Structures are given as C-alpha cells and as structure tokens.
Image 1 (tube, rainbow, N blue to C red):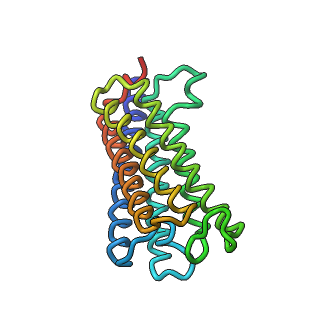
Image 2 (spheres, rainbow, N blue to C red):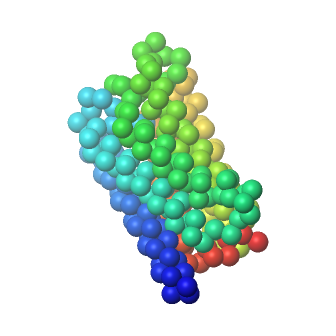
Image 3 (spheres, helix red, strand yellow):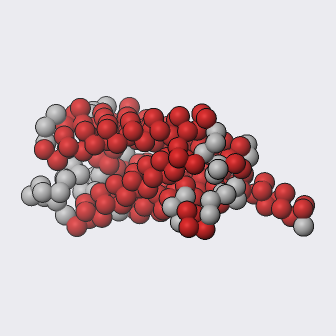
Length: 218
C-alpha cells in the first residue's frame, strides 16, 4: 500500500513537471510568433483566420492548455483542501483554464479579431473571446487560492503579484481594445499579461513537481 502511494505521488509530480514544460514551450512559441509577425498585435490576432502564423499559434495555445490541465491534475495529488474548498482549488481552476484555452485554440477569431460591439464581430469571435477570457479568469482564481492557502512563501508572493499584475495590465489592454484607442499599446499590455500568467504556471508546476506543495493548505 505504501509503495502504491509513493508511485501515485510520483505520477502526480510527473504530470506537474510535464505541464510546466508544456507551458514554458507555449510561452516560447508565442514569443517567437510575436517576433515573426513583426508588428504590434493582440495575442489572439496572431492566430486569427488568414494569418500565416495561425497554425503555429493554435499549436502554441494547445501547449498552454496542456500545461494548465496537467498542472491542475498534478495539484490533485498533493491537494489538502477540504471537500468544500476543493471545488475552488487550483486543481479544478487550472483544469478548467486548460480546457478553456483548448477550445480557444480550436476556434480562432476572424481576421482582425473584432471585439464585442464592433460591426464585424461574429459568433465565432464571441466563442474565442469568451473561452480565452474564461481561461484567464480561472487561472487568476488559481493564483488567488494559491496566495490565500499556500504555506510556501515564494509561491504566495509570486501568486499575489501575478494576480494583481494580470488584472491591471490585461484590464487596461482590454479597455484599449474595446475603445479602439492606442491598440498597439493594448496589444503589448495583453502580451505582457499573458507572459506573466504563463511564467506563474511554469513556477507552479515546478513547485508541484518537487513535491513542495504537499502542505499547500493550512
């Protein structure tokens, strides 16, 4: 029985480690795409229909989705939340975020990625934006729970910083997009927010892989 428990624990850590690597690969791929297109653009625009980088972007977003889902799965093995809190724990939130980003990768926005309220906004754009925003929100929730319940100081600090930074930076970028004001700056802000979120996911996964999150809940 003890040997089985040890092997199960290793399986959770492997899932978390692979998830961290997947998220890191996704981040690197997004940076490469940003360099290749050579112009300021919102993250989703890099994978819009008709863009030369659309296929590469979809693959990158799938890596991000896999990273989130595996990070959540890895968290299940070391989760110490009560049954009530478990439904709001990083495990469930990250798995949900991974699924949301997975759908967003399969349903790209149309050319130019029109925002809600624009004349060329379509149902396809609505699905993509909804899933992408939902993924961000769920990942942000995982950061907040990690800050509130983790006993690991570095994870608490990074989680709080990441959640606050993403809320402010991504929020500003979103407002600029909706109002069509300084959209180039908005694209830069959104990309920075995305990078912060993925770096947090990478750190989270590596901490789980080391087994350091066994005492995540007080």
